[in-house]
Amino acid sequence: TNDHLISPSILAADFGNLQRDIELLNTSEADWIHVDVMDGEFVPNISFGFPVIAAVNKHAQKPLDVHLMIVQPERYLKAFKDAGAAGLTVHFETCPHLHRTVQVIKELGCRAGVAINPHTPISVLEDIIAEVDMILIMSVNPGFGGQHFIENTYKKIKQLRAMAQSVNPDLLIEIDGGVDAQNAQQLIDAGANVLVAGSAVFSSANPKAVISELKHPKKL
Ligand code: DX5
Ligand code: ZN
Image (cartoon, rainbow, N blue to C red; front, side):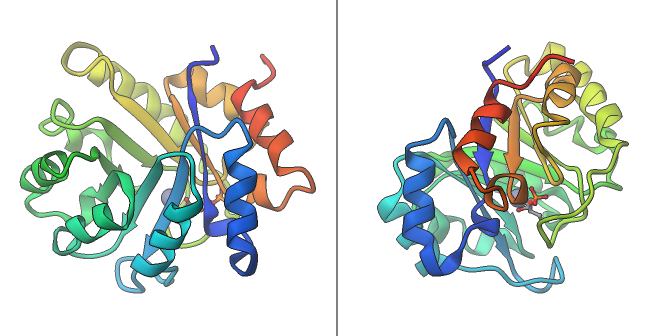
């Protein structure tokens, strides 16, 4: 099917030519623009914050899909919304009051997402799945682009799609880390419908062609 969404991650863009890379995404088959925020505490890397996101938003013609890899994300939800976020995804591992955090995201008018790390089981999502628009399954350990895809992810996608069937059939399942044109179709077949790709897109000589391949993957 072609009804899945592609969300290229600007973590792998050229930050010295960010406007150029955003304009490239504007004229591509990308559906969203994935924005990775890292705080050096939840994850061992620091990426960028509000002024950079606001600058991206100034040029972007596609919704910003903001992935918060930060502790206590509830402190900053409104600021991310004001910087231009269309969707806000918080990590399960950072939110002791996840239900409340999800309600706040929805009250802000943003699409609400919850992300889980590779070692976090799908079962912990049972009592939040009906409340969210999207679950992001990390297919690498968060913090860096360009890592190797963790194969156990396929099993988790199938479990989550089965869990969502009755309570949230429209659930978006986003996969983030090590996604490329080779594994895209298998991820979709397992039940994913949003694919994030950073290095596969931006380390290519032809990023727009890679985005098209992700949007229309070859059937296996
Ligand atoms: C990792 C980030 C990802 C990253 C993916 O912590 O959440 O969005 O940019 O990069 P690739 O596609 O290179 O694995
Ligand atoms: Zn991400």
